[in-house]
Image (tube, rainbow, N blue to C red; front, side, top):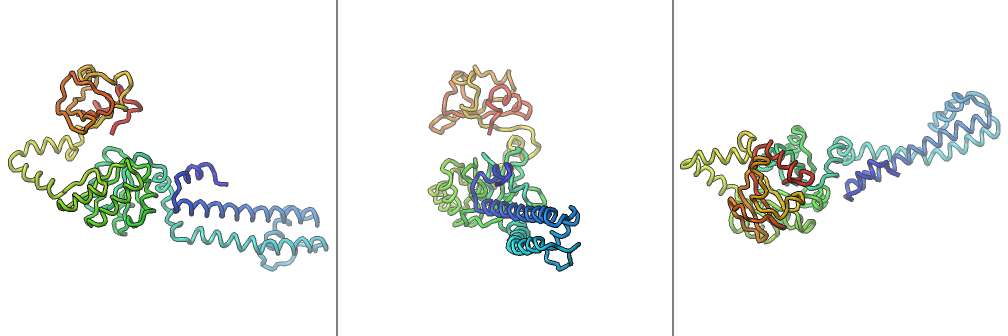
Length: 358
């Protein structure tokens, strides 16, 4: 029987953690059998030949270890029979225990698991988190932004050099091949809020999108593309957003030429510079009940918290920029607000259920 913390840890079923739980159960069983054998030996020698506790313990240990030392004092016939039975029974128990303990400490996967136990436990319990596939230049930038936002995430990577970098930077990660379905399951794809696929390999991106969508129909899938053709394939495969990094970079650099101040402003509010101003998206159901079905003006957020409503998304997906005050915020809609950290925190406390905001 596993301890409670391990039962909780094994709640979400994955092969890696199932294997670990089996090893732990076997190790506990082997340890228990050895302890019971020693206890039976001590009690037997005390009861049969009137040994003291220290003599009985010593006799039990040299008998179980089969080292061949002599008895501390002559055994009776009953004592000799008991010793023979103890030796015979111990042969199987000792072999089983050694086998289990050897597997536990020598098995490669388990050594890695023990080394990073706390990290694996944290990953295994994640929900509403982001999975980042690949820790290249793009993946590192995404991780940096999520760390600033204090959002939970896990990285999937298979490159040894990048794994060392992840360890050094104390980022939660899983080592594995993304083409294997098990790695996405271990990363918690069924419970994830989003998955970001950063590979430059078009085929691998499409495969990962298909797999992620199969495991979780609601997860937000974001990936990269280098051309329109692969962008269309990724959208058909199930990606929600396909980012063309070259296009964004080109637009950014061109804008620096003719409107540098605007670029500086957007760098500020997108946290590319100092972390001062934030965009936040607020869903209708996250709002406390007393503020639902109110007009934008009735929200009175400017006077209550200082944040600004800069956009409203309707149920059909289109946006209204700088929505009018008489628009009623109703089920299915989302607000886009802008404010600094203090204003956002004040807004969370005043308007949101459990201060939940994406």
